[in-house]
Structures are given as structure tokens and as C-alpha cells.
Length: 188
Image 1: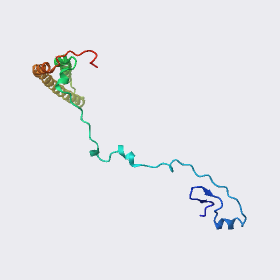
Image 2: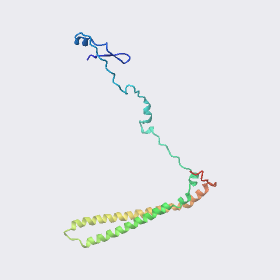
Image 3: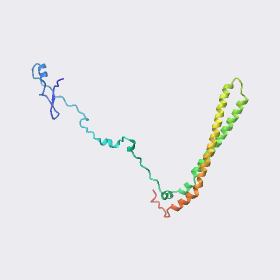
Image 4: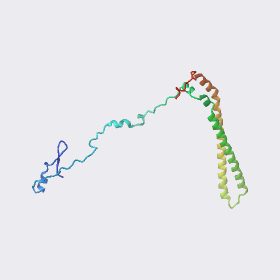
């Protein structure tokens, strides 16, 4: 398809450069053609550099996780109220909560046992199918409750064993604690 204007070396459109076909089709008369405005685009001036790939990784091995610095024993010993933390008040609270959960499970299991016994006594032959399903569900809940009670008692015993190391930890803290009094201005 012949173009109505030619593009020069500097990017401007030229009116005088028309093809021969257009001259013939216009009947030989010299008609002036208005120059079109060039289409404006930001993409023409954008030069893509490969620097944008700097922040994008191609493989998992390109990324190395930054390891956190572990605090030294000296820093740990100089924390505020560290001896109170050694006493383990959080663990004592955890143990009391475990005891509460065990008591709740015991109450639940006694209620389920009572319901199971009542269903066995008042079971009718007409409703035996439905009653047997309910009894199976009750037995499954009793087994679950007993298992939970046993696991909670075991975890309580394991948390109580943590206090076996308390004397050694207190001795280490007392050895590494700074003898110089820390001023309030230094603590931030």
C-alpha cells in the first residue's frame, strides 16, 4: 500500500515525497497533502536496561538467608529480671492450665459414662440401631478423653523436669552477670 508521506532521516514527515500512483489517481493535479502528527508514545523513548534483573532471582540458590546473631551468655546474663525468668513462672501457669484441662476432661468422661449406662438400660429393640450408633460415638469420645488426659499428664511431668536444670542455670547467670551497676541512661 503506498504511503501518502515519506519519513525523513530526522523522523519528520515530508509532504513533497508522494508516490507516482497517487499523482496518477489524483488526475495529475498537484494537491497538497496535510502532514500527519507523529503518534506520541513513551515507549519509544524508554530504554530497557538489564539492571532491573538485579533484584530478581532465577534460582533458589541465588538467595542466602541471613543468619541471626545469637546472643552471648554474657548478654543473656545481663538482661533485666533474668533471675525471675529462671524461676519459670510461665511454666507454672502452663502447668495449672494443664491441670484445669485434665479436670475438665475427667468431668466430661464421667458424664459420658453416665449417659452410656442410661442408654444401655433404656434401650428399646425398635431404636436399637440408632442407640448403637450413639453408644459407639460415646465410646469413641471416652477413648479420646482418656488419651488426652494421659498425654496432658505426661506433658505436665515433662515441663516439671525443666526445673531440674535451674540450679546450674542460676550458677551460670551469677558467674557471667556484670558486676558493674548499669545506669538508667545506658539501658535502652
